[in-house]
Length: 251
Image (cartoon, rainbow, N blue to C red):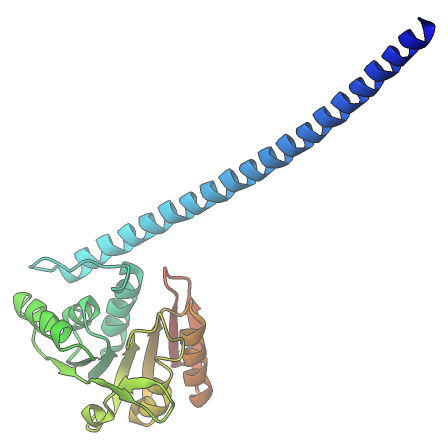
């Protein structure tokens, strides 16, 4: 009987030890999962706050742009694949401040309208899409904007190894005062816009300003650095815009 009681007590004790260890392990798992959930919620909250702040900043820029340029027809949607309001406002300010005689833009769209409305004397916009180029022309016509030429340059194999604009369409361009690089599409190929430096460096006026959109991406940042290196009397500035804007301007 004593032996049986002792064995029972030992079995109970071992069971308690097992339960305690199991509960401790479960507590650790729950705690770890709770901490992970807390971190995930904190990260999501941070992302949400950043998105809300970004939307507010873009709304601010758009309101200033609308007040500055006084559009008399609907303005196409911005952001996403199109230029963001912070970039558009910066382009308008650059045109108004420096009064460029010739603006050349790679990638047409709402930015074409903004540059023209801001007072650029002559704008030549290059687009690889015939359909999109026509939409840009229709938009400019609706806004009764003059002094803009939209050219279609299909993407062809370039000496750099990338598909880039048909260079025959660019042969007559020279003494460019403001160059805006927002094309060809570069989301899938980081090197898609790199030929712009080699093709345009000799076509710029001495005090030209170069604007590179999407400078948050490595390819566009490298392109901006290439322009700055080729123009030692210029300074590279990166603006913390939604997509990142690189401006290479005279020192």
